[in-house]
Length: 238
Image 1 (cartoon, rainbow, N blue to C red):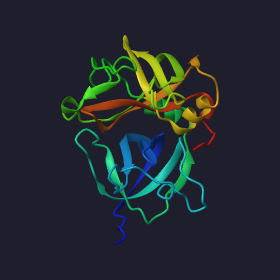
Image 2 (spheres, rainbow, N blue to C red):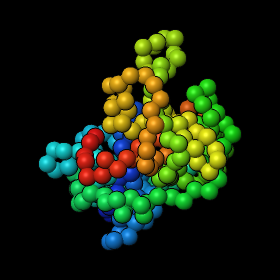
Image 3 (cartoon, rainbow, N blue to C red):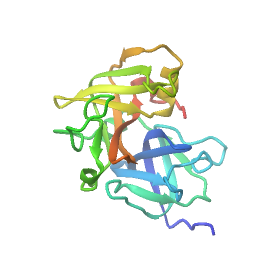
């Protein structure tokens, strides 16, 4: 049975991240000329990913990073720490109503003092990239837009002996005197770097959307869900 739309949320899209067979989109609500809180549209699928059909506009194009998007919703669907989630009305097209400006992006930046949620838990990939699931369940937010220091993108083999040719793309940076090494799941940026060589590449004047992903083997991983550089403003990619 089709879901009826109960309300519409208009968001400035700050993440268009790969997730399972689809995407995880998120952004800050736009109300008139004001920027509000975080909203993450989710589907009714088991892992709540957004499919290509879900994020399609009436003209056949799909929602992109930095679009301003009107999304028909059914109801809030908060998780334990993903409190920002809203269930989409899947039978309706989304509507692109504008594009982010540099001024709007500056308004969206979150002022972070201290750790990204909880620090002190690291995988073999690098520092501060995960949180024990039990500790994460006490959190009440899962999205931030930050201005990192010394941002670098590292492309290297994953180290999986069963898939020696596969490579990972990660974001290394500093924030408030702490070091981070997070998986970079921005679909367009990941694709760009995987087309090049292995290495570590500095990135200037960028913003990062960081997100807490789904639980995995007892941990919740911090993800770099979008890397927003000045050249992406006014450019659409999916």
